[in-house]
Amino acid sequence: MRSMKKSKILSRLILVTLLTIILAISGVFSAFGAGDPVYGDETNPAQAAITKRLLMPEGTHTPTASFTFVIAKKDYNGDTSTDALALMPAITSKTASFTQANLGTIASGIKDVRVETTSLFSGITFPNAGVYTYTITETANTYAIADATKESMAYSTGSYDVAVYVRDGVSGTYIYAIAATITVKDTDDQTVGDKVDPTPGDPAVEGDYSDMIFTNTYIRSHGGTNPEDPTHQALSISKVVAGDFANRQLPFTFSVTVTQPALVTGTATYKAYVVDQTNTVVTSAFNGTGMLTDTMGGYFPFTSGTARTINLKHNQKLVFIDTHVGTTYVASEAAIADYTASVSIVVDGGAPVVVSNPLPNTALSTSTRILGASMNSAAFTNTYKEVTPTGLDISNLPFVVLLLVSTGGLVALIAGKRRRGDEVVYH
Image 1 (tube, one colour):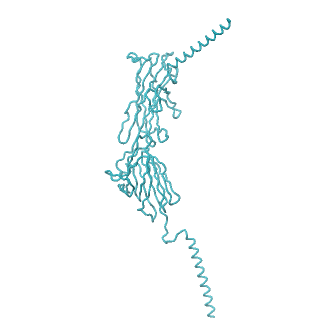
Image 2 (image 1 turned 30 degrees about the vertical axis):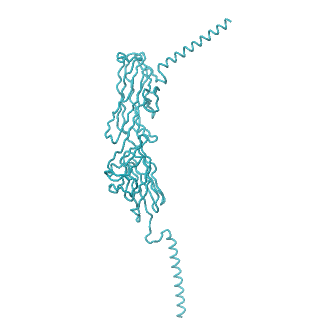
Image 3 (image 1 turned 90 degrees about the horizontal axis):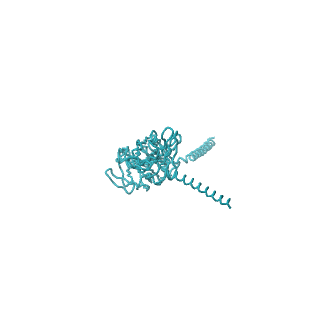
């Protein structure tokens, strides 16, 4: 009986000990809250950095821009009093800068460029052990907009609380752990209260950045106002006919669709004019239906994602002036008898890409193309078939030659017989 009691008492003691250990461990983790902080030691203290993320439509050149982040004192060991905040070291604002050399990555028509600040707490001496909490936000309107009609920058409204856990070491205090918590969402896929890993990225690993991210969106428009100025023509779709007997008054029919970039909100409508070889607006009812007019003359409104039919004749071109950089377009030319089509495509001022039809009377499309920040064009050429002036179909020429040779031989044979018959009569 006594041994059984001792066994029960021992079991209870073991259970109590285990529960005590579990509670102690949970108390440690509750100090950090949900999620994992990042840890360090006296030799390699924990570090944190900010990632600046700049989103823009594909084809947009990365702007030369700098962005600033404020690191404000929040509390020391949970104490927000003036005396407690006075014990906290001030952290200098951090800056992240971009240049056109920052190319980023592209996915689904969106260019994603990221840079990282230097370590937030490097070189900072904390006077005492304890938990120092700072709030990090981005300063708005640090990028100077040169022309509000051509570009816009939407700033992050996100916010993070960063708790810095400081311990006493052999040579003074050091940062033992850092926990970064989302207090205001930067993007919709974040959740307030979640923790992120603020560890600076490894420069040797491509795409490795701190997860404490502030996201801005940059939109640029071509911003043209004068369709007769080639430098204002964001996209030109031109028509030229070739061949000695080509009809230069013949209308060639196109289906044209322009689609706004994914980052542009609402439904965009763009203006397109028809101009001649001197870049003079000549838009008329001949070119299509639904024409409107402004101070420059007739134009066609193109609603994003909606196809419009346009007719162009020799030396005419359809020009867009006010599209967003990153807009996509498709121009498809209908088949026309006796003409063979080709198109030379330029994107963002790059080298021309030529797409040709091997056969006449065949439709031709540019396929989906993007409008870069520089020149964009699709130059269609339709070549009329060769015509033989004699009226003979040159494809039948071998048979004609054989017929002529055969006829010549028959005439020679008849003439030879006639001469022999004449010789018999005279003898």
